[in-house]
Image 1: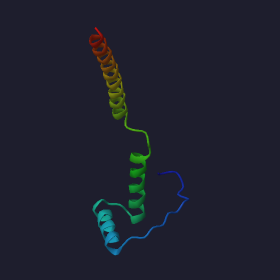
Image 2 (image 1 turned 180 degrees about the vertical axis):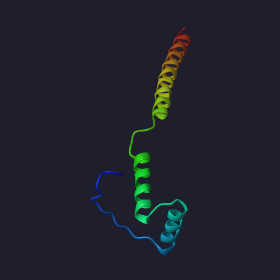
Image 3 (image 1 turned 90 degrees about the vertical axis):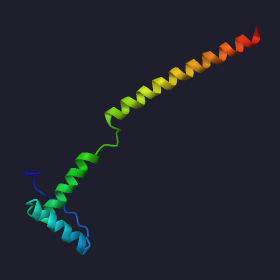
Image 4 (image 1 turned 120 degrees about the vertical axis):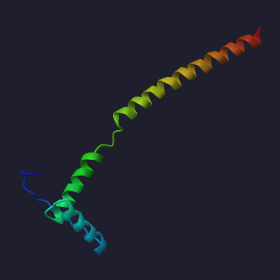
Length: 89
């Protein structure tokens, strides 16, 4: 954020209530302007929402479930063959 020139501008509208709440947050947190507060909020959002990839732990859990489903499918298939074989005798 610091050091790089700020060359792009984004504009949006707020209700008087939203603007008042934003000003209060700025004063409470020693933020010098509403623009700085908006920039910080957007940076936070971009840092935490930038990826459409699932979190690593979720990927591991899905992979583990995938292997368990494969194992169950194989087990059910074997049981079905055993049942067919025992009915044929």
